[in-house]
Image 1 (tube, rainbow, N blue to C red):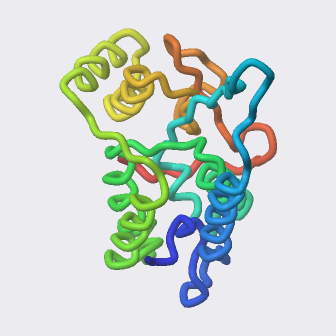
Image 2 (cartoon, helix red, strand yellow):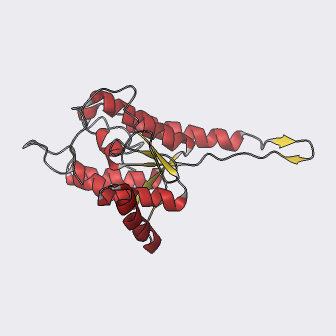
Image 3 (cartoon, rainbow, N blue to C red):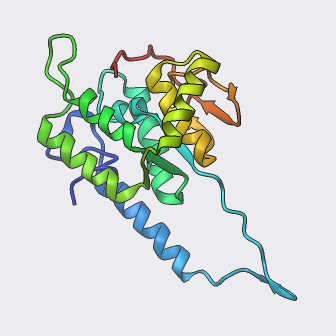
Length: 206
């Protein structure tokens, strides 16, 4: 497996952004091992109910910031969020996000080299597929996106991302492209960089 999400951190051979994918991988494995070693919770009269948190949906910009050394604070925060999501199973990815991720990180930035080569981007995407659940669009997703674009005046790509969350009950959407804290129907959006990171938003495009 590539150095991806626990390719969530860049491998030593690519020190450009200072991430360490193996650390995230160990974190995730440790979490799984700990869960298996823990006896089921029980109360008198039967097993206890355990509430499973609703997972959130990650936007493309969170993935791309992991590899962008121009924004070190956002890079660190994105890595932290994704590492946590791998460890506690609190994040999912949309197929759309993986497609956009490869496009964004392999595109030249202002006349400079892209963040990743095509081979690196493909390996990172494969790693993400192995470490986070990925959801795929349906006809209902498309119809919901049309409704969201009209109702909330969202761009088509943002409306499509919102549709994944609305259709499947995911909450929140982690992104800096929406209005932070706003509730779009039954889905709230959180900007993971809003409170602690004061750096301008990158124009990665769609």
